[in-house]
Image (tube, rainbow, N blue to C red; front, side, top):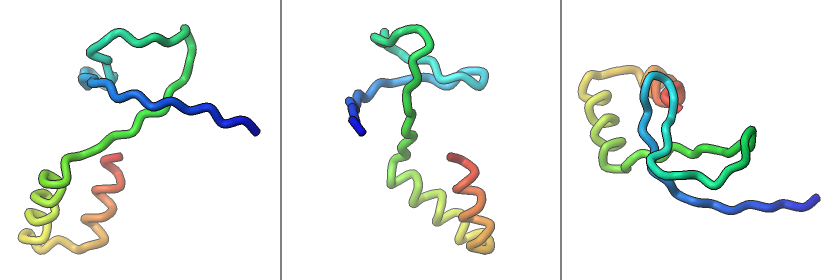
Length: 69
């Protein structure tokens, strides 16, 4: 099995249910890519803190966070 992988970070905007790249991509028509969504750790911690303050059940919190991605 040959594994070929090259990572490139690009910015995109989410509009009407579609991610739109903010720069030209050198891709062939029909080519598939894998998208990894990352979140700022500080913002994530703030949301966790807000959920804890609301005394939400941990299972509900984890379920909602899983659904975001």
